[in-house]
Length: 267
Image (tube, rainbow, N blue to C red; front, side):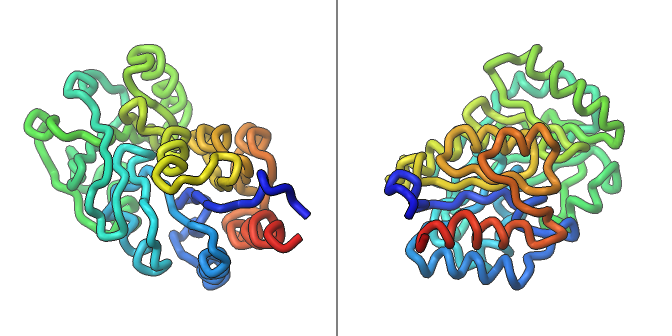
């Protein structure tokens, strides 16, 4: 029998690399696991670097009822996408970059080139079209997230360190994918997101389970009682979690829910 402190009352799941497959598919088994979780009286929500509109199909499919975290905590929204809380970047953050850059406002996605690196795949993922702009001068007032994009993975990693050193505590800079560097408000990280959700839903962090696959998910691992890394995560991310499940090509999310959340409730 698990102790009362370890009973999970809220599950916070990363989306890409965890909840969905590499092809962005929500499997029947994953869907069923979420249904079992919510029918057991456990709250379930998702957190992602995606914009709110890019998670709407999952919100509707899973019939989510609790606050959802977009932009890694840049926006907290209700299932109808109305904003509960926002952490936006100051204009001066958009000054220097060494990678291709996208900007997400609270509502829109801006790119310098319609078919630049990874734009087509991102459009397929989030299910809406970006707005092409010649520069970012007119779109800096409500910036929720800046994304640095490159297939030079070493350059993305280096830029992550440079951004952390240059802006320090003024921003949160972390890779959401090996080729994406997400720059957000310092409170817009998944660790802060877990703390805010705990406050909103009145659930102690010891009773929260988190699951993810990337370095930015480690922030939420540190704030939760039950942390689960995907099998497709790096060894560094796996070592930061309490448990490790299989990969997102092998039903890792569903297996984790069955083994570490649902089974624990009846053990």
